[in-house]
Picture 1 (cartoon, rainbow, N blue to C red):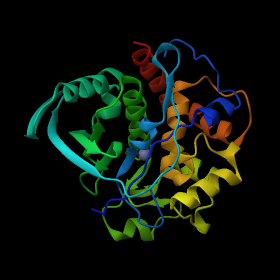
Picture 2 (picture 1 turned 60 degrees about the vertical axis):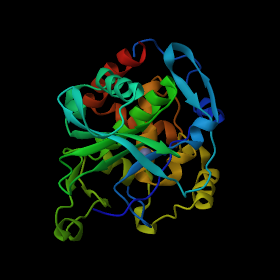
Picture 3 (picture 1 turned 60 degrees about the horizontal axis):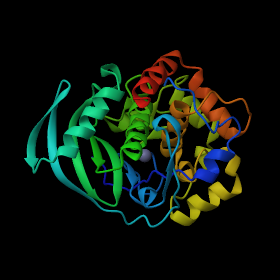
Length: 289
Ligand SMILES: [Zn+2]
């Protein structure tokens, strides 16, 4: 499929705490890039370097800053997913691989992870990735680096945000050029956003896609700086795909917003979808453990 691009997950504490409605203590239950577009959705290790502190109940806020885009991902072991289990295809297994997969299975219900057919352990500067293994978006690879438990959880939730927003109820897969040509909503490289669904509503409500956007570090920082109340994190300003993935993290980890910033409105939009609220409850039970 399309060539790779590199996206990162960053979560500056100052930004997080400044969000209206973002509690200091959470309740206990618990791409399109127009330029260099890619189907790979990534978190990078620069967030880990600036890891700030875990907060209550295993919730974590990650401090970071956007650095370079010249990231590197090395797959060190690859596994086939068989139900809740993984079977080594190649590479050298390590204990953390099994631990990370087990955490994914624990956190995410089968209904939200059934398309993940490959699990890869990665090294390099990237913390997590998802990538469709076919244009049909029927099978995806989930990739994760060796991370602190709390950061790993954030990474998994971020990647789940991509899987959700590019799921079969969200986009018509770009299996032929006609999908893009006929798309009257938002076309990501994976497909055409389905009207009325969360991804389409998110993009049409909060992004001016006709104007396009740059994805260089400086452009992302400038976009965030121009309207910091519009994004849950700096990294969310990368593109609509990263914005909804980052918003999904805040949707899962934080209480329902009581403010009305654009970032609050983004989180609140996810609350309008009962299946996402149900998924949130499931995840929060796992995150509390
Ligand atoms: Zn991402």
